[in-house]
Image (cartoon, rainbow, N blue to C red; front, side):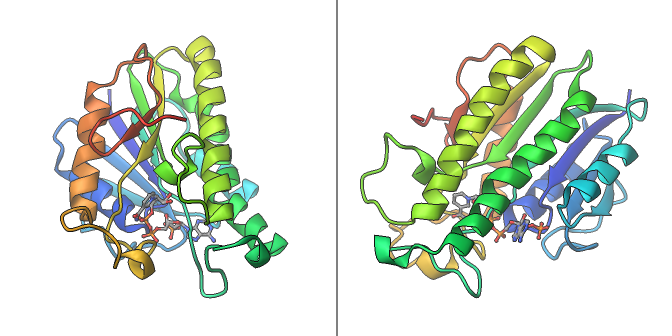
Length: 242
Ligand SMILES: NC(=O)c1ccc[n+]([C@@H]2O[C@H](COP(=O)([O-])OP(=O)(O)OC[C@H]3O[C@@H](n4cnc5c(N)ncnc54)[C@H](OP(=O)(O)O)[C@@H]3O)[C@@H](O)[C@H]2O)c1
């Protein structure tokens, strides 16, 4: 059976490194990489990788899923990387006066709605005899219990909502697709576009490379079984409180 890994949000730095690591993994036969651009800048060329474009509309997500019809192999890994903290127009809020409805909607759409749409539309294709490990990139700042510093309202809320959706979907999948293990993953502060403006305050040795994080996530996934209870992990394989 052809062993397929899917990376959604392939244009992200972490996504690019995941694609490169998966391409080097002999147990993976084919990698499907999905993103807004045809050739993500961070991924190296490999014959094992097929790139599919998506604008992340519901129609486009459905169209990609149709190309992945069952019978073409077993999906054993699915990793969803989409997430924004800032854009040219949006900065993370420092105080209540900074709240903007349109910025909040955009962040919730990219960080929460789009990952769940992918999970919902891909779920029927994940059920099989093989174990399928699914990770959605979340963030520790989405942990309500761990919120000590405040700020970043929209980003925090979008990841907290994502975490709740992951927890809820994990409960449903346990019943409907017992071969699937779904987790939320906190990569730690990683040297990417997303963290660039905020790297000055990161303690020495705590700014990770995307390659390090990709290896950490793929290593963690290898250790997880569908009956593993925990669902929110960090880069070190440690549980993060919801
Ligand atoms: N870097 C960190 O320190 C850090 C810390 C905690 C959590 N994370 C999480 O890790 C994940 C990967 O981020 P990264 O650090 O690798 O950042 P990145 O390189 O900036 O990647 C951004 C990702 O978001 C997607 N994206 C951007 N704008 C979008 C839009 N308008 N609609 C849909 N998708 C959009 C991109 O999709 P395309 O592939 O289509 O371009 C890409 O997958 C994110 O979920 C982030 O929240 C990162």
